[in-house]
Length: 341
Image (cartoon, rainbow, N blue to C red; front, side, top):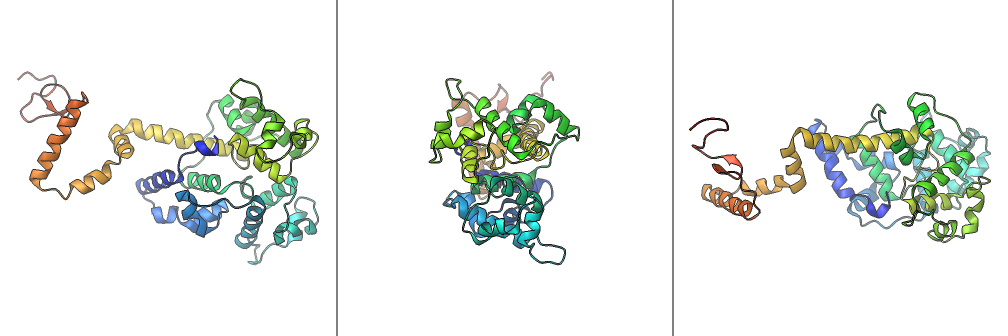
């Protein structure tokens, strides 16, 4: 889903708060900015602005630096100290000095190192890369949903994750295939080009993709041929171009599948709730709560006027109901369905 097509975060925020209440949880705790910051990597002070849609996007280099510093500050070792750069880099067979520019905010790390850092701290694969809106959107989704049991259509899951249907099946069975990162990134890039074509059905050209983040098509040639890895800026640009999660190219199969299932489960929960109680669906869709709250201040005569006005509106829209009813509800003295007067 392209960023412009995503639902407004403010609406998601309200839905998560309402869902928390229905589950008997405190919305203030579920939606605490500190918790959302921990999940998303977005600074707590920015979250209200991101939700409201008024936050300016942070440049990629500064964003990656800030989130790396947040990881070190909030995910400490057993002694409560920040992990040394050497210990983090050792986990993916790199020298500690290779993380120096990232730690100082003077440069971007290599894509393989980004994957290693995120794996070391146990955060989702797009933690360092995701733009603020998608990061907060993911955190809100994780606040309200859990991963389902995986009984979903394999082709649909393949489309969402970039994993082949066979690999999806293996992953659901607890046997996820392990690909070298370069091969994984190449396969998912080709998957995006194949499954998200232009309107004429042809794949987007490398030039068109690269132009969206001010690069040349030649810069993606080695990636398209499976011979090289994009840098972080190119990876972020590719994912933004296709409107996929900030970790689409980096996530291992299990994580990618878990993300897709969480999103599907959230959609299904909304459908299920609407089917279980159509009236609740109407209440949520039309913000009836605010109307009832205001109507509660009316006098008895005001309530009668409001009911009459609703009947007029329903009549004009052809929704008043059948004879013997007012607004579709049985009127006093009307025969109940199936009874003889």
